[in-house]
Length: 247
Image (cartoon, rainbow, N blue to C red; front, side):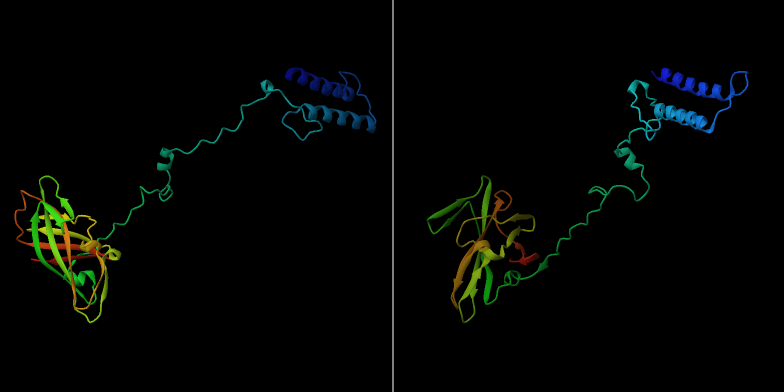
């Protein structure tokens, strides 16, 4: 098809040349109108079969098998991880892996009394005694047993109202977190209980001059802690850390 069109175009152009120059004979004299007719016709033919000129007089759709694809634009390849690694300095994609995360600073613990650490006003908190028992019994209606091989370290804390008016004491709202360092070698967290007298969750109104008995429970290894020679409470409350020497 393509060759046939090319031959047709060449034939028309040769015919036009023969009309103007002849083939060894005397040149034919054409009028201005005849020359214009031949030029316009030749231009029309060339434009019609020129597949690279869609804006010609007539655009001809050429079948795919006749198209010259040697100059087709290659598809754009997606950038791979290897390509990203070859980008100039400062041009790499910012990811969570190559962004340095600032380290969280842990507030340094400071030494204080239990009253100071809890920030109590009008109420004094005092550690009065400790016990080691396999179970904790509350007024003969509630009991807790330590895990096998463990003992409960029971720390008794008195909340005393030294003021002239009753004081509302709400430990639950403060959400204190207690730990205990026993005999300078074992640190354990306080047990979470539903006891009404648990210091960590105590809520109540203490009348003027009156006091309330509360407790903190810690589980320690029975073979390791047979008696309490020294006790230090660790307390985290309101974003601050405290060390509280008790005995």
